[in-house]
Length: 65
Image (cartoon, rainbow, N blue to C red; front, top):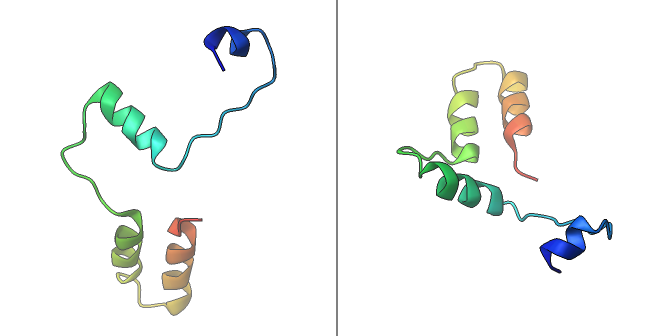
């Protein structure tokens, strides 16, 4: 599909993979100096809570689909 086809209103929807957006942002803005794994960060934050319900809630919010 060309840019012309897309601008002609052919109704083509392009889906980006989960890795595409961070790669595009890194190329556009420069790679960040610190990159964190979201799941590991969520586990670290959840461990700060003593309430098991809150721990599970934090992990559920940041769980990758």
